[in-house]
Image (cartoon, rainbow, N blue to C red; front, side, top):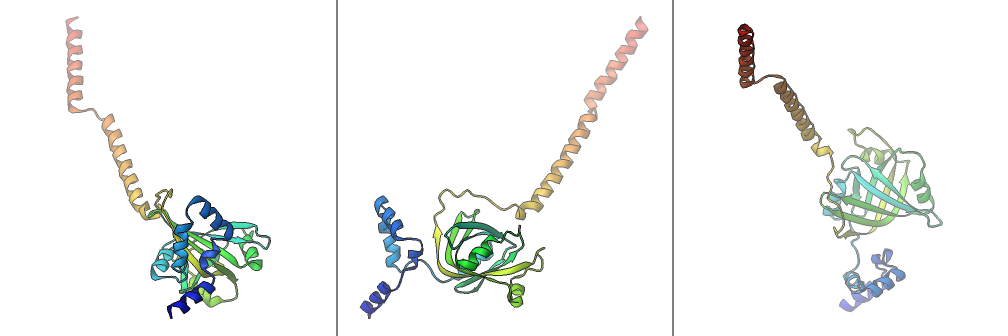
Length: 234
């Protein structure tokens, strides 16, 4: 039984081959990393299924990058964004998102019309986590129910069409060289309150600078008395 499973696995193309082509493997071999990635292949390759953890991670994103290529292989990367949850798991192999109107160049749509291979790159800068997803994407513009499912009533835009992404493989990257950044939105209320407080303190400070202290007032009064006494003596 075990030998049959091994033969079946050997005859089945590994999804790591999507990234590790022969030329990539040759460079890995030359630079000393092939053994580590061979172990990934021996364990069955990259993940294929959208796990609950991955679905949750993607549902928290407000920004991802979609890479496509035309029939000639010319690549193109486009930012796609929306409210948290705009990128949704429809099942354990399928993602989808509403495609909002942008500058109307339609490069990604044109590429997908002639080449379904696509790639999604999702980044969480706060936790320095990045996820890579290889797959095939298609444009859906004739399914109102799907667009309604992907819509967010509280967001000020409606999707022109949906992009449906079939996951073939996904993997994590290490956090090296990722700057730790946080989104401003969760802190805007606190920042606004601090700015208001600072403005109030600055106004109080200006008022204090214009109001003489009691010591300054006493000194001014003594100076006036001395000036008056000197005037009488003369």
